[in-house]
Length: 94
Figure 1 (cartoon, rainbow, N blue to C red):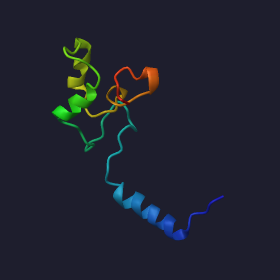
Figure 2: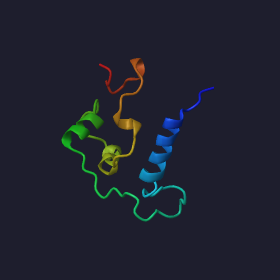
Figure 3: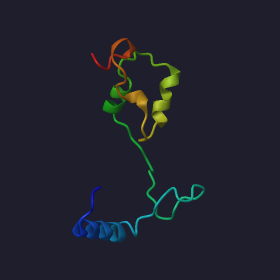
Figure 4: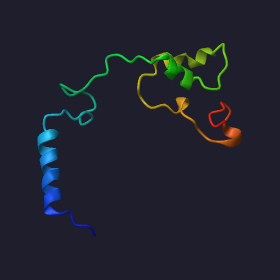
């Protein structure tokens, strides 16, 4: 069993109490957004982002891919390399 030294525990207490005390915590009340919580107002993807997201897909792009215009900055597995071998239908790993 590991024991945290008094110095480390004191620093941890200092960090959690002073730094995080003024920062709003989102998600504790799912039906309400905390006052002062950060808000993403605008997302702009550049050409390089679209080129990477559309790797292995030929023009004309199907209408089903226009969701990328509203993707935002949240995680999506669609624009990242997946499995290798015969499952790599978009050629990410070539």
